[in-house]
Length: 199
Image (tube, rainbow, N blue to C red; front, side):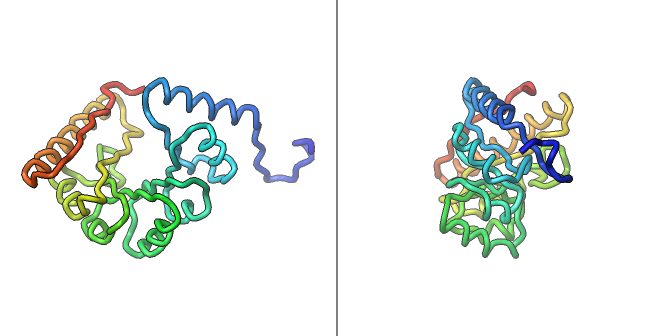
């Protein structure tokens, strides 16, 4: 079919450009030595998510449970912290694939048995996330040691000064979590991979 024959509105994708961009991003992440978990909110299309997975992405990131329920992949991160009402659907999803979820409240953290958790930190964007190292530690403590996997944050919209301030806050959170692990005589692997300059 010719694109000019499509009824509007219609989504038109240049497949060659799409595949080239997916491959380029995957290659760049390999060069940086990081694993790629693309956020599928940019397209919300199962076929494109599968192309990203086939290119080497370790899993997908979604904003909400509903996206995870219909998109492909065996490993999914629900990046936007959930409210308790969504937990039954999250638990059902976790029975069929590996699920991680961002959390920024004690109430939800206490009710995530059997689901891997990342404590979200607000690094200055002001949307979601723990507001202080102390709050982050409190939320991490509410998660079981087996389920707590680390922290996550969203530094978008920050200028260079804001990004550097975010790095300081992340370091403070990691230090507080390491001190907690030491007090509890539990193991905590701290891998500091926060870049000091924006890429």
